[in-house]
Each structure stands twice: as structure tokens, then as C-alpha cells.
Amino acid sequence: MPATPRRIRAGSVLAGSLLVIGLLGTSGCTGIEPAGAAGVAGSDLVSEVADRLAGSGGQSWTATYRLAGGKTARITRAQRPARIAYAFPSGNLIRTPDALTNCVTAGTETVCTATDPHGAPDELPATAGLVTPDTVLALLNAAAIDSDLAVQTRETTIAERTASCLRLGGVDHVPAPDFDVCVTVEGAIAGFTGTVAGIPVEMVLTDYQARAGDHDFAMPPGARFVDRRAD
Image (cartoon, rainbow, N blue to C red; front, side, top):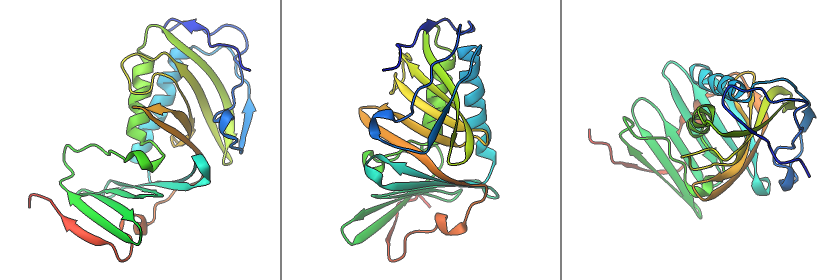
């Protein structure tokens, strides 16, 4: 069993060797090779990882994940125009400049409902099994300013990508006070485990491509379209 994370004040240095922790260790997921790190200021590293994740918003990429139970999901971000799409076992969520489209599959029928995109957050259903980059970024930003932060860190390789991993505990005023997260050097979520607003989430990166396909922003073939936009 790993040791209990020590409490540190923001800006202080985590003394000694940092513990190596297995992300999603209780779920039996593989593909994570541990590597140690030492002498890192905990809150500074949290801020660095948050900045890395925020920077991915200006890039095009496709990230594929293995979820709890072995199912898969995909997040695709593209530019010109800026857009993002989520594909998960129970449906899709697609944000473009023109619409926020939520596709729900029940049995053999898929219904895609378009609403106005402006001001509406990317809210995934509880059945999605993954979290959005914006959700993880909000958690990291809250942790970075927490004056009583419990943190463990490590560097590792996930899906052949170098990633920085954090185990955070006792973060105040967030929907997931205790969580593990890994972020690649490109700024993609490489892994996440935690309970977000009462919903358990376990996801680990299995493939990353520095490009985005237009097909990820199209509705599934045969879907019924419902337009609820104001215009």
C-alpha cells in the first residue's frame, strides 16, 4: 500500500523521494510504466500541469481512452474552426461554432439534439464514463491555489507518451476532492480516476494522434436530428 500523502502548504517543497503510485491501480488497467521524481514543489507542478492541459485547447488532436469495464471513448479537438467532440458508449457530444449537439443511443435508435452553443458547458452524461478537459482543468486550478494541498507526483509513460501524474487529496470546493490525473507533454489527459459529483470515473489513454478527422464531428449514420436552437 502507498504511504498516505503528506500535507504541504502551497509553494513549499515536497521533501525526499516522491512516491510512485499506480494510476487506476485498483482497476487492473495496464500500460502505465512508473518512474520516480524528486524535489518538486507540489503546487508549482500542479500549476504547470494545468497550464499544459490548457494549452492543448489551441491544438488539433484525437485521444482514445479505455474506460472502466473495458469499453472505449474518444475525444477529438480541431481548429479552424475550433470544435471538440466526445464519443462514448452511450452516445456523442459535439461542440461546433454553430451548435452543441447531444446524441443519445437507446437500443437501435440514435437521437441527436442540437442546442445553442454559446454559454452552454460541455456536460457529459453520467453514462459517458469520462471527464472533459475543462472539468479536469477546473479541478487542477482549484488544487493549485489550495493552501492545504495533499499531493504525490510522478513521471511515467502512457500510450508511448511522456506524462506527468498527480495524486491529489482534500482539494476544497470542487466536485472531486480526491483524484489521480496524468497529462501528457502535449497537454492531453493521459489518465484520470476519481469520483466527480458522485459519479466514478476511470479512464486511461490508449492512443494519441496529433490530428483530427472531420468524421468525428458528424452525427452517427442514421441518427434522427432534432433542432432546438433559437434560430
